[in-house]
Amino acid sequence: MYNRVIMVGNLTRDIELRYTPSGTAIAKTAIATNRRFKTQTGEQKEEVCFIDITIFGRAAEIANQYLHKGRRVLIEGRLVFEQWTDQSGNKRSKHSIAVDNLQMLDSKAEAAQARYEAPIEPPAATAPASAPKPQSAPEIPEIDIDDDDIPF
Image: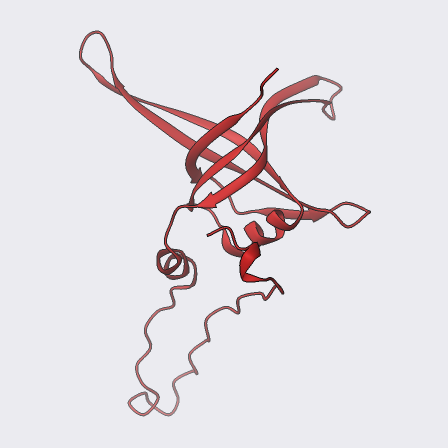
């Protein structure tokens, strides 16, 4: 049997990174894809598909460092059927994608600007003496990676 899924969409939430007891990284998020079509009556409609995705290992850590809600990605993986029992005892299930390959489709500049854009502050010399000091942009966490590990 062949189980292969390729999707392009935007992340619907920030990455949730966790580690297994053995130290394997697991990143969870979701993507949304849309399809526009015309009905038989000529009416324009849009259909949106939301699906959870799971990324493992080093790719999960890289995704956590570079991806956030709204980023456009191409994912390739396999469809997984998850089943569990919720807190009320009801059986639940869903399909998700276990990601094998991930490609970031936004440019590096767009991604950095979208996430770390800080308001422009006037120069310190023109600001009144009693003005509060401007806050610095948030620090970007560092992960020791080789250029070969970055998927773009």
